[in-house]
Each structure stands twice: as C-alpha cells, then as structure tokens.
Amino acid sequence: MPDWTIQKLLTWTTQYFIDKKIDSPRLSAELIIASVLSMSRIELYTQFDKPVPKDKLDRLHELVKRASGNEPVAYLIGKTEFYSIELEITNNCLIPRPETELLVERGIDFLRKRSGKQLVCDICTGCGSIAVAIARNFPDADIIATDISDAALKTAERNVEKYGLQHRIKLLCGDLFDPLIPQIDKSGFDLIICNPPYISAGELENLDKNVKDFEPKEALCGGIDGLDIYRRIAKKVDEFLKPGAALMLEVGYSQGQAVKDLLEKTGCFAEIKIEKDFHNNDRVVIAEKLQP
Ligand code: GLN
Image (cartoon, rainbow, N blue to C red; front, top):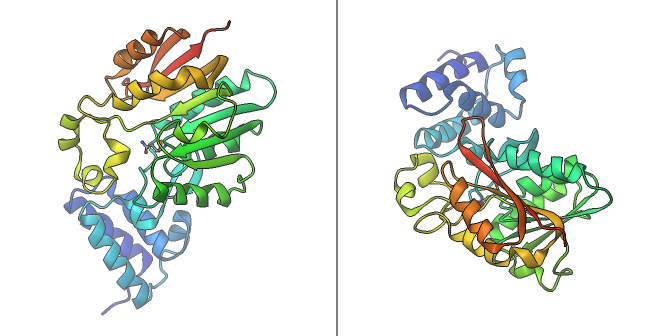
C-alpha cells in the first residue's frame, strides 16, 4: 500500500467529511490531523509530503469516525480557540462560541473606562472562557467565576493555570450567586457578566445533532421559554452590583426584549441596551446600575 502522506490524508479526510455533511470539512480535517500529529495547522502545509506512521493513522481513523458521527471537533481534539486564546475543552463544558466574543469585548470596553482595580463576576463560567479572556486583556481585573458543574470547573481550573491566572481568577462551585455570599462584600462587583443556558425546551429538539447529542444539557437549557436563568439573575443581581456597575448578559437570537423587560422590572438599572451580533441577531443585553 502506498504511504499516506499528510497531503493525501488531508484530501481524503476533507472529502470524507464533505460526504458526511460535516461542518467546515477542510478546517475540521486540518484540526484533527494537526492534533494527532502534534503539529500546527501551518506545519501540515510545510510538511505536505511527510509519510504518516501507522499508530498515528489508527488514532486518526478513530477520531475521523467519531467526527463523522457528529461529535464536535473541539471535544475530539480537547481544545478550541476563543478570543484568540487556546482553551482546553472537555465534554463537561459548552464549547465557547464566536458570538460570545462580543460579550467579552463589551465587558473589556466597560472596564477600560473605569479606574483602579475592578472586581468582576463571571457566572456560569463553564471552561472559564469569559473569565480567562477578560483577565488576559484587562490586567486590573480580579475575577470570581462560578459554575454549578464541578466537572466544568476542573476544566476551567486547567485553563486558569495554563495562563498563570490563579492569583486573579477564583473559581467557585455553586448555583449562580450562591457561592459568593461568604466570599465577598455583597455589593462588591464592578461588572457581572454571564452567558447562561438560554435554549428553550422547544428549540432544544431542533438543535443540530453535534450540539444536542454532545454538549451538556445543563449548559444549554434555560427552561420552558429559555429565560429561567435570566429571571433568577434579575431577582438577585442588585445586591451584588456597585452603583454605576454593569450587568452584561448573552441572550438568544430573539430574547433581547424579554431580557430587557425582566431587568427593567427590577428598577435598579439606569439604562438597558440590546446589542446585535454579526448575524444581526440579539446577542448581548447591557444594563448599568443607577448611581445613588
Ligand atoms: N461561559 C461559558 C461560555 O460562554 C459557558 C456558558 C454556559 O455553560 N452556558 O462559553
């Protein structure tokens, strides 16, 4: 049998993924092959003619098979990129999405306009994506990140350590604000940021297989109408925000107004804005707390 070179493997795997209707077939092939060969994607192209040894082919075979069963590439290779940062990913956490970068961007913009140390809370941190992205881009932030899933927090812990942020990001396990009470002065945060589970029960059924069958339900489902977590955040958030501080929430593509209404009812915010993402869908709700 002729040698499998990197080039041949790339061509074959890409075509296989096209036939199996896998998203981004070329990129998925590159990511999986690069991971198995412990190379960067660019190295695949500079070493096109290199033969691939049998043990690597066996490993690749296994991953290609799993990918063709719709398992997300990020879980197969154990990593993804978010806000230009490589993060470790396990199937205990949601895979960070490019849309969430808008939330991070707005969080950082807000913090940059303030002076002195900023205390930030990232609720539902998952793999720690938002907390790590803020900490790496805004050195004056100290962050508390909470999640109800201990398994997700183990991944977050490795991401925090990977970037040496242990002294600036404290990870706490518990439901939304629950783990905070004994930790800090209750009215302490300058920014509370959260990408909660917000998929409604009806939408869950119609999600793509790679999401529905592989990503953790508890990181996706926001109850019957998808708004459960927003309601619970709205109920408690006031006592955790400093005057003039901000609450920033990622929302589903059509949830902007409903979340804005929920926050308006609390009566504690001066201004509430809905921002659209690059697909022109509602994506972030930003609320600034009234000054006394
Ligand atoms: N904060 C993480 C993210 O945005 C996880 C969110 C979640 O589990 N709903 O990717």
